[in-house]
Length: 478
Image (cartoon, rainbow, N blue to C red; front, side, top):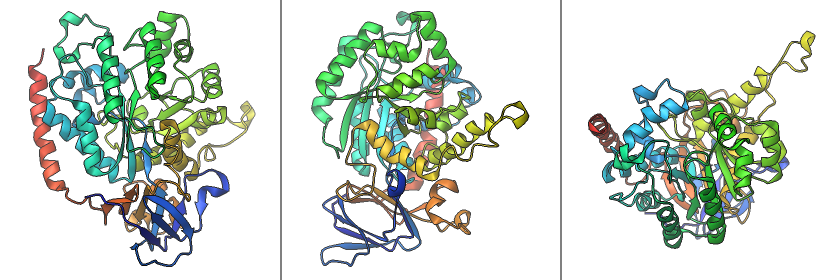
């Protein structure tokens, strides 16, 4: 299904590269792809052994790199009990209440739906923070995730989550909510690394050490051991942190320090570490994260949906933090695709700065926040920034020698009509721009806005049936 082809992409209206400064745009208008990599950009003539993609009236971006997701939640969108809850009660109302209801078929279907949604937005690399694990689990969920990603033709990073402790008495929990033994957790990470992990800069498969939350899911001693083991295995580290003020309260109450200070004490900061959210940070925490080159997966739509707040991405980036974008799980983001996420990031960073504006008589110095984040900034965070935090140096930018991961958007919907600058359309105008093509490693994953071999109507029917079954199972669980 997915074969490497030599391509010539011709006559693009605009090319955004994902690189900073003056290199953020390339005049093109053509891109040559050979052996899965970008071979040339400029005014190019077709050669005998290459297929041509007509990109007239199209905008080309690097394929998006999604650095934080929970794919199993793709069957939990808009769940009523959690719809108007903040993070902690939402966790109990939705993902924890339903996790025991998933069987192998519903889990596979959820993963497929989430991956298809991402691909249709132009996403080529997916990092899934997968924490649906429990002792004696009857199916290999990691294998399913890798299989579904391979079937679609996207790069996949498994962030192996899970908990080795719980805030409830284990004996009172249903089996699917019980924590794993720490030794079993580490052994499974080692198994997954041996089976799937590729350290190459353009890897199709990666494994990451990713306890679900640094403050709640494990002990400080175990957290230090996960860092030591990950670095011995040559893999990266990822977890949730500082999503809400509860993290500040918990870290102060349990450890007498801030959440970032706690992670630093356990060797959980550095250029091989990235955290999801980082919404509620103190100035000294931003400095520490920046000094160590630690990364963030910012999830603006989920943070907005749960009322958590808005991460200060310009301040984090200025401090030295590696900034990337993630969609988070669909149970707290009913638009879990990268175009929606980028659009939200663009608007919310501006709104965040605008909220800080004061009148001049009260000491104000600016009117609004429209300079907080440009289209180029957001694209860089969602592509090159994502590749940086994942350690995929050959991915995320359009430049000679880089992996040929790119999205070609055709702006043929009325929402894009009248644009003075088509290059900004896919991010600035919202919605989902139609994909003329999505290439990942030079392989065409989407053609004329269709995924070859996918019956979208059938996928929708299966999803509706699965939601009914999940609701019935959830109601009968202890």
